[in-house]
Image 1 (cartoon, rainbow, N blue to C red):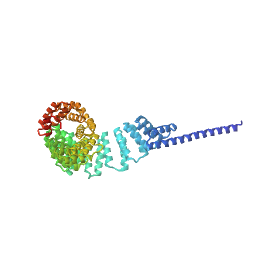
Image 2 (image 1 turned 90 degrees about the horizontal axis):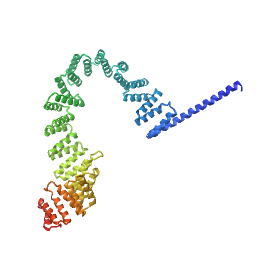
Image 3 (image 1 turned 135 degrees about the vertical axis):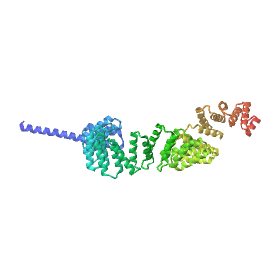
Length: 570
C-alpha cells in the first residue's frame, strides 16, 4: 500500500468514527429531550413519582443539562430530602451561571438554612445578572449588617443612593450601620444632612434626635424631641422617643405621663396602644399601685375618642383576674358592646352572667341583640331557646331552636347541635307532634349518637305510644350502660321491658331505679310503674303497696285511686 493510500484510509476511518460519535450524541440529545418533555407533562398532570423517575433518567443521559437538575431539586424537596434537593439546585446553578431564577432560589435555600455567607455569594451573583432588583439590594444590606461586613453594606447603600438619590430609607440604614460600627460622627452626620434636606418633616427631626441620643449626645437629642413636642403636641413618634428615654433613665413619673399621652393620642395605632396599655398595667402592678389606679388608667383610655373594644376587653379581663364583683364586670362588658356590639366574647360572657343570676329575660334580650349583629353565631339561639323553654314559652323556644338549625355548618359544635334537636324533639312531643319530634331526635342522634338525655326521652316516648319497642329498648340500654345508677334511665328501661312483656327483667331494673331514687317528691310515676310491673309478675300485694306510695305523692290521681281500690290494672 502506498503512503498516499494509507493516509486516505486513515482519513476515512477518522471520518467514520466522528460520524458515529456525532450520531451517538445526536441520539442522546433526542433521548434527553424526549424524557424531559415527558417529565414536564407528568409534572403538569401531578404525577410526582413518574416525574421523579423521568428526571433521574434525564440526568443519567446528560449530566450537563441544568433544567433537569432544577426540577429534580423540587422533587427531592417534596420528598423532604433537603440534602439532595440542595445538591441538585447547586448543580443546576453551576451549569447555568446566567440563570437568575436558579441563583435566587439557591440564595433563598441557603438563607433558610442560616448559611449566610453562601447566601451572600448567590445574591451578589444574582445582582450582577439582574442589577435592577431593589429587593435583592435590601436583603444584601441586611446580610452585610448581620455578618458585620459593614464596609460592603455602606458601599452598596452608596451605590443605591447614587441611583435613587438621597432618601429617608437609605440614610436611616446608613446611619444605623455607622452606629453599629461605632462611627458616631458619621451616623449623626448622615441623619443631620437628611433633616436639613427636609426641614419641615418633624418625624425626621425625631429620628435625628434618636440618632443623637444613641451616639453620645443625649442632652441635645432630648432638647430636639421637646422642641418637636412643643411644635406638635400629638406627635406620637416624639412621644415614643421620650417614653424610651424615660424608661432607660428609670424616670417612672415621666414614663407614666408620656404613656398616658400616647394612650389617648389619636395618632397611636390600635395595636401599639394595646401593647402600651399592657406594659403600663404590668408596671403599675410591679410598682405596687393598687387596682384603683389601674382601673383609672383604663377609664382614661376608654373615655378618649379613640377608645376601642380591645382596651374595653382588657379592662373586663383585668377585673375578672382580680375577682371583682360580677355586676362590675358586667358593666365593663356592656362598655365593650357599646363600642363593638358584634363582640361575641363579651356578649357570651354577659349571657353567662345573666344565666348564673337566673335572669332569663336578660338572657333573651342579649341573645336577641346577638342575632341582629352576629346572626351566624349558633350559641345565642341555643341560650335564647333554653331561656324561653324554662319560661314555658314553648313556641318562642321552638322558633329560636329552629332558626339556630339554619346556621349549622360542618364546623358547628356537635354537642350543641345535638342538644338543639333534642330540645326541639321534647317541645314537639309536648305539642303532640310525634312524627316531627321523632325526626328531630333522629337528627340529634346523627350529630351525637350518645346524647343520653335524647336517647332516654326518645325511647320513653316510643314506649308510651307502644311503637318501635325494639329500637326503644336498644336506645334505652345505651343510657343505663353509660349511667347504671341513674333512676330516670333505669325507670325508662324497665318500662320498655314491661311494654315488651318481659316482666321479670323489668322488675330487676325498676327495683334499681327505686333504690337510686334520691327523693320520692314529684316522682310518683316511678312507684306507679313499679306497681304495674309487680302486678304482672304476680306480686299483687306488693303492687298495691307501690300504687299506694305513688298515691301519697300524687293524691289527686284518679287512676291510682282505682288501682289501689280494685287491686288491679284496668
